[in-house]
Length: 456
Ligand code: TYD
Ligand code: MG
Image 1 (cartoon, rainbow, N blue to C red):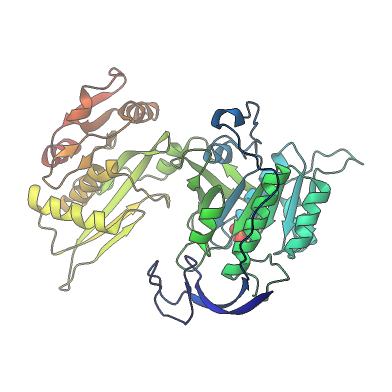
Image 2: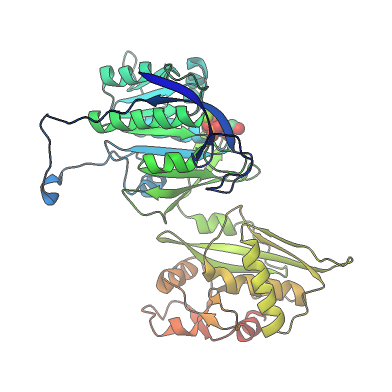
């Protein structure tokens, strides 16, 4: 016998409560509790009397566990080399960012049977998109596509379709629209999402197929029910970008089969997403050289160095409270760097508005861009041009000292490759450089000497 009763569940982290509460005690999000019907199973002690399989640790290695290549290099790299059979990947992102487009393009390039399950669009809409993306355009007359499309939201039907057709890759667009009929909760509620994902996960293991789930994002930019899902699935990818830019960035938030440092960069065109193979050229293509407040830095995105323009605009504040706005950069980090500039480089910034922008709509988390941020602010503040053939890297400490950064050789190489003549680096990095003759290297110890070096 099972009885059901109402519980309140946090849609962010899955915390359960018997009454409604405004703020989740577990993840501290507000207004995230939704009323859900929870079936409680009667627990009875049971003893298992069948055969139990336990194996020794190293006897379970499958030497020939081949990854399924999506043949989209940027996607494969973020996945850690391709889709792992038997695993579940969750792709999250804002509506209209291009999730369905990405998975459709991947489906077209995978050389295996793919089942595309959608609860969001009609078959006709899928066909229209496929046509727009030139999927199957090389198909000979009479030849059938290896992509099967199914519009279904009932999980049990989806599961039996996977059992019956045994595709190697399954795409479910989206997990929020799928539901199990034996739960009375509406599709998209935590209970439904959790149950559906868990069952798909089990089937992926059983049938040894790769399942890609598309997940919606809540207003705070989190995948709905993220904590709950993150624990269940093997890999979580975020597809992000600004609507007004055509760039899209794919990041791994969790990856059981690869690193979470890698990013994939795409550009949205009329005929779908194009891979961006040399991001630096694109991020610098619109750079205005004769303008103060613009400094180029080299940021590591995963294993790749990317040259990025940091722009600052410093203006006197007419009102008491100066504004500080950071786009693509951590706001708190900006406040710290402003304090360091004020104290260690004698810049009176407390009465100035400071606007900081990382060009191209990219977001940087790395401390190695600190020095470039400080230099851009110094350049705009003093209204002097920074040399336009120079790249600046270094982490800035609270004492105004410049600290060493990782992967210095790769950063220098990328700067040299794109025709820059000089690079400012932390002096502690200078000893470890292996390539020295490519470009002029200026080792510096502190913030004031870096600022001196960037002006012509
Ligand atoms: P879509 O993949 O439907 O987004 P999601 O599944 O994340 O909601 O992409 C929708 C947007 O992408 C839409 O605004 C139109 C644009 N788009 C293009 O610019 N070019 C294309 O070839 C396609 C298919 C979509
Ligand atoms: Mg979609």
